[in-house]
Structures are given as C-alpha cells and as structure tokens.
Image (cartoon, rainbow, N blue to C red; front, side, top):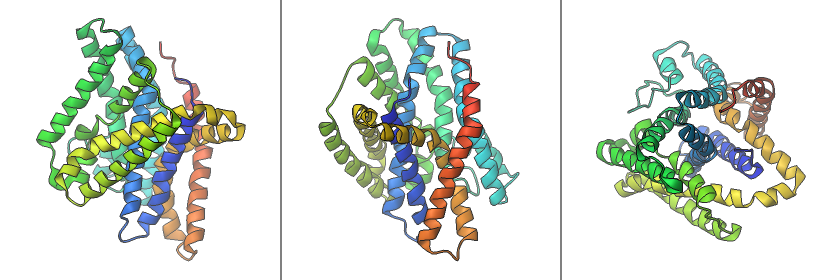
Length: 344
C-alpha cells in the first residue's frame, strides 16, 4: 500500500517509545512502568506490520502463484535482513559474541522459535524480529492453502482465514505454553505470539474491505481505554497473575489496533500540515534502524560517557541513534529498497 504519513508517524513514535524508555530502564534497578511502555510499543509494530502487508498477502492469494509468493518474501527480506545483519554484527562485536552459538541462532531467527534457547540474550529486541520473519513465511503459505481450499469466498474469506490463524495460535498458547515463565517463554516466543501480527491483517480487512470507520474522538477514547487495559494486563502478568497472562495478547492487540485506527483516521489532519507530514515520513523511514541499533548506542554511551551528566548521556544517546538511523536509511537501506523486484 502507498505510504500513509500518519502511519509513518505512528511507526516512528513506536520506535522512539521503545528506545527512549530503554535508556532509563538500563540505568534503573527497577524499571517497572517504563519497561511496560516499551513492551506495548512493540505490540503496535506487530499490528502495523500486519496492516501494511495485508494488501500484498491478499495479492499473493489472488494470484495463487509460488512465484508471486517468492517475490513477496524477497521484497520482505531485502527490507528487513540487511539492516538486521548489520545491527547483529555490531552488537555481537560489542559483547564479544562473534561468532558464538547465540549469534548464529539470532542470525537464523531460531533463538525463541518454540522456547528461549540462547544462553546470553545480549540482543534482547531480536525476539520481536523473529516473530516478524516467521510470520512473513508462515502466514502467507497458510493463507494460500486455505484460500485455495475454500474457493471463492467473497470478501469474508480473508476474514475467516485470519480468525482461524488467531484461534489456532491461541489454542497452542493455552495448551502448551509455560505460563510460569510468562515473559521469556510465552510473550517472547514465536510459536505463541505469531498471531499478534495477524490482528493488523484483520484490521485491514475490516477497515478497507468491510468499510468500518470511526471518528477520531471516539477512536481516541477507545485508544485511551485500551492502553489502560493493555498496561494493566502487562503489569499484572509480569507480577504473576495467570488470568492477566492469558488475556495480555488480546489486550495488547486491541491497543495496537485502536492506535492504528486512530492514526489512520487522523491522516487528513497530518496531511494538512506540510511540516508534520515531512516529519512523519522521516520518522517512519528511520524507525526500523532506530529500533535495531538503539541498544548498541545505549551500550556505547553507558561505557564511554559515564562521566557525563545523565541529561547529556540521554541527549547524546538519542542524537547518535537518530543520526545513525538517518545515515543508514539514505545510504544503505534506500538503495536496497529501490532494487527490490515488483510484486506481480
């Protein structure tokens, strides 16, 4: 789908909402609320991915061609893998983990496939990237198989398939997940969280195919309520409450979906102001590298700028992360994106 400035703004804000709290989490013994804020920001990324990839997945299903599916995967991998490999190499050098068994598991996105395997989780944000990469492969294949089996299902076919996927993963999580270690063995495990991106796909079907719309005021109110619900579910789950652990994926998905719906509805307002539109597009373009590289710069600032005041460390950390992400997009990512094959 064409770039939507308001969704780029959401993407950029989500990246900063992960990176900025991590600075304070890194320097606090009890991160508490800040860690929960970062956790919910990652859930927004999941929903965004499902939403923006939905037209491409639907196109693959309509074509029913392995060639089209391979082109889809090639486009995804050219977008995600080169910056990921760079960030993994950098942080592995910083932590003296190159090469190590943990490095190779990160590289092939298997460190959290069905449980946490790495002995040293030195690239902690990689759990979400594994979920993304496995979704790119598994969900389109699942969708193609079911859409072929169902035949012409009209506009409700994709909706039914997405719901089957979500219900299947929910059952796997309910039956086989180790809720005693919820954070590491459930919330951050591919097998039990790969449904989280499908909620964005589901939202696309509702908003673009079934024409569900909402006013900004109503969506904002619902967004506030869902953020409270998601926050409370995450906090109580972290504290050991079993019901909260089981409800968290739904509360987090609801928050992500309402955040996206609100920013989508706010698109005319963002487009109205040229500066805000340019800022939104910029933040969207650098968001992926901010997410990938912020831990490396956090470590470098902590190691080599310890004599600086906390405020100076924070300013340097943000400036370095954004500057590097900007450089990387324009001189590394953009040429690769321009070389991607067309989806046809």
